Image (cartoon, rainbow, N blue to C red; front, side):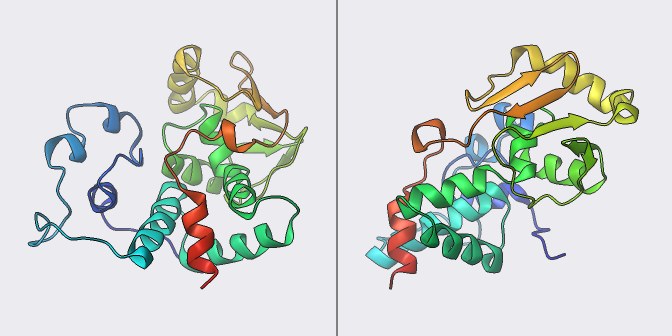
Length: 208
């Protein structure tokens, strides 16, 4: 399966903002944006004025990078969002938020979306009692995500369980920290998605 394998911090520097791709490191003094906020490459310090198309492209790239999705799959999500009732941009973000790897991250069962993707691939989670190891699996209302009993005993998940008490969980999710179980109460509205993404620019990009 294709995935991005280069340095994650380069993506944050390219977008000139924190995309929170490396978990706790993004909140520490080691964060690349805090240490070196310029874009990567020898011309990173050069000031450029973006065109209308450039702004739309950057917004699409930002969303892709936050959720760890490549171009082909992102385009498919947009097509799906267009077919749904409601506002296309909001539908797109709702689809991205409902990915299993993102839900696992939002529930606090991983420190970053990248780590969540890896943990899902390794089969550490059950969805409604059945093992699902596909990060792009789209969750729905009332679905229950549980850490496998065998995985709960691992040092990794013990650390995550201890950190859950201080984690802010979105209101569209319900988490039982003691049993390492979470439920999708409902799919998020636009107001529930706390990301600096101008979804209207993404819609304009694909409308050309």
